Image 1 (cartoon, rainbow, N blue to C red):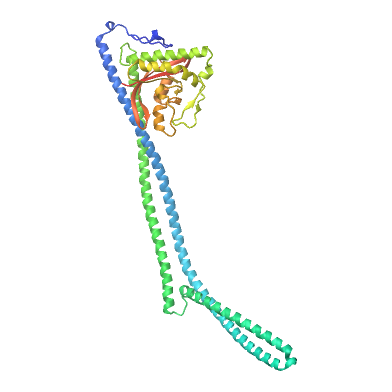
Image 2 (cartoon, rainbow, N blue to C red):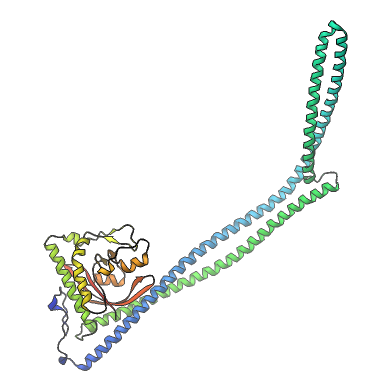
Length: 455
């Protein structure tokens, strides 16, 4: 029978079978068959659990996507409501424009009449200035005939003549400017006012303007109708998406329940494998159980020696102040016992990897799942930005607090046997068995020795 004790194992304490002759061969065969079936069940349960994890991750992503889509649809509805409100306001503004245009047309007609009056007045001023200039010219001639007696009057007459010339020039400039304004305003008036002389040219301009205004109104109405139709369609899509969101939520609940059931099956299969391995029947897992117990004892003895020689204090050895290492992805952490484990662990861990076939890794984890020093092959420096490569090849200085990692790290029984999918990054997984044994230093549980192997 296997002898398992709840104390630090040494080489003499590992599992040792009693002679087969002392056992009932039929029971041994039954136990071996049960072990194989249980191991197969564990494999299937681990695969199922992994598939459920993947499906749950997809469902979670779908839920996030649907929630984002619903939010965007709500934004679209709000925008459509705003468009509808703006188009309604636009129609009202068009009506006001019609009324305002008619009013402006009337005002412009008044301005045109005023300009005509100003033009008439300027023309009269021009006529008066011309007559004044002629009178001044005649007066100047008569003054010159009078000789010295008319000299003073001649100067005044010349000044009046010059002034009348300037007035005439200014009046003509005013008339020219009024003429230009009259042409422009007449053109504007013919387009805006509906109170004109009814000429064919004016009517054509008025009809052109109102036709353009009507076209704008029709365009605004089409925009409003399209916005209403789009809003109705969006609301319909929103309802369908909300239904999908509810269905995905239900699916997530079902997945969660299925995940728990698969986890329970996996746990039962693992416990059965442990019971069979500890029952005295030598199984395919027995050599790995013996190896992990022996290696855990070596790690514990090495750490105790380091504490005894004051190479490290218990406080530093049990450091849980994990410092995030900048620029690492997946995240790596540093502790105060990194240098010690980098010096002491590799020789022991690498020896265990070579001791049996199909061993994938052998690592010591503290009670929180922190791996200070991994096997050489997985202690590669990270490549900036290459998360997939880092996940598979740079597994040291990382915290593995998943179900398997944390269970192995916190296990205090003589050994713990688990089955799981190991994430290698990039959607790649490896199905492994893992056996763990506790590591105790100075009477305190430091962590666990994890040994994984293919099966």
